Image (cartoon, rainbow, N blue to C red; front, side, top):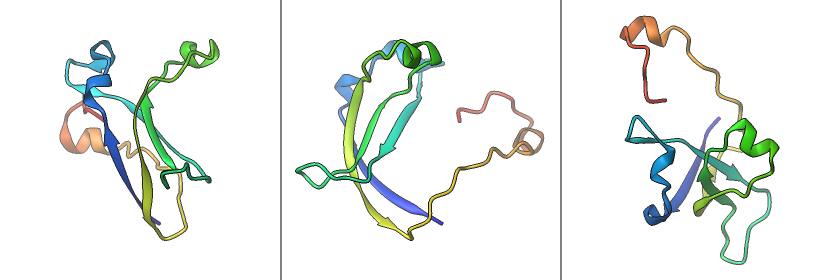
Length: 94
């Protein structure tokens, strides 16, 4: 189960107020079933808060791309709760 995406990000569009700890940027990557006229079906935008989503605020798009390889199976990732005890750190960037 894997998929590879290629994305081009316009770094001039990054909203610096969205940076976590001044250096981490949370993005949402969307994969569509349909391609645009450029053959792209992946888009990336600033992660929205629950309040922003509920208010139906516009997404701030940063870039787009395409799926260039997949085995046809994508599954939801599960968080590894053992990671904190292995590393001894609570503030991992992901």
